[in-house]
Amino acid sequence: MEFRDLKSQYSRYKLEIDEAISNVLSKANFISGEEVKTLESKLAKYVGVKHCITCANGTDALNLALMAWKIGEGDAVFVPDFTFFASGEVVALQGATPVFVDVDKETFNIDTVKLEEAIIETIKLGKVTPKVIVAVDLFGLPANYSEIRRIANQYNLLILEDAAQGFGGSINGKRAGSFGDISTTSFFPAKPLGCYGDGGAIFTDNDNWAKQLESLRIHGKGEDKYDNVQVGLNSRLDTIQAGILNVKLDAFINHELADVNKVADYYNRELTGLVKLPVVPVDYESSWAQYTLTLESKEQREGLQSFLKSEGIPSMVYYVKPMHRQNAFQIENYDEANFPITNRLSDTVLSLPMGPYVTEEIVITVSEVIKKYMQNVRM
Ligand SMILES: *Cc1c(COP(=O)(O)O)cnc(C)c1O
Image 1 (cartoon, helix red, strand yellow):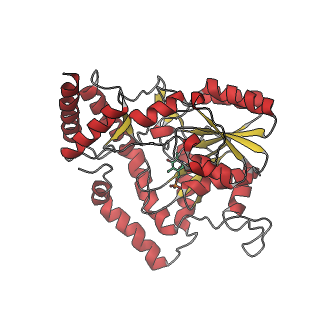
Image 2 (cartoon, rainbow, N blue to C red):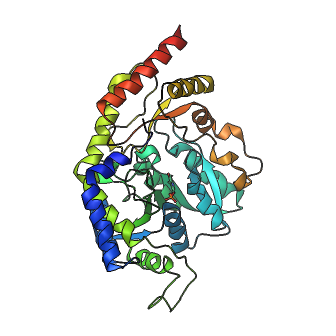
Image 3 (cartoon, rainbow, N blue to C red):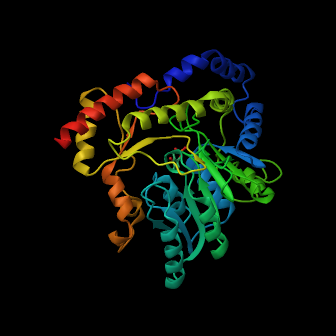
């Protein structure tokens, strides 16, 4: 059994994907070919925003957004404590100060009450100026944007939506990737919409920022790429990856998003009452980058994970280390009392095999093993 099955998708779409790749090979338009433009318009339409700018990966997408806003030294950027490293790494890379905020124990997304407290505290300390909230759509579930937007308006902050895992999710039909002033996603192979290597995209309705991003991703180009008006990056999406994504985006829209939600329903049906299941609030739709259980203790999590492994079932811990404890950030004097939920989640979460090609039989097999383990620990 695979944790994320990418092979079934390839065998189903082999003809189309191989054709997309060989088209690029025969045209030899490896960089900035027409497939890239086609993909950008399809993505913008699906997400429901005016501009989509693709780039080399999801981390660059975040970096480029912060660069377009000229975020740097002296600026505070609020980031959830429970996320993938890149969400905070880009803030530090731009020279700004990441301020980590604990998350909600039900949704795993940024706790908006603690977010507002952290903003007030940062203003009071007066060392760095609040500028941006990085809102992460963790495991596929969009963050609480009605509250985040209210807070952003009140304190005059920008929202950077990190939808690397959230692509395809929605709130009341409004898609992830449309909630930020700028939003980003990743096409890393294991994400909800993945390519066959690295890739990323940036979304915005703002014409000026879109223009900035277009320039920044190609060495800060002006009129052409040999006229450089600012210092940027070399961060384009390869034409081959765009060709592959054009096929995979259609599959994602036509059936994969619905299928992965069916898989979540199967897990919910099999595991209800046995362990704490992931929560999707009313009016929210998840794209299920992960299906994540919360166990009662670290010992129970480790016990279940080894039992699953002994039965040939892969599982993963996302994330074992809270951001505030990552040595890379060299945060002095952090107070563990500020992060009770992240600290607990990092000890107790466990993600199961997930994806649109997981069958009902696989879910039943995995669930039977979990049942067996949970019944034994209860005895
Ligand atoms: C994967 C991921 C990223 C980075 O994407 P890459 O394409 O791997 O650079 C950023 N944020 C989150 C939340 C992610 O899961």
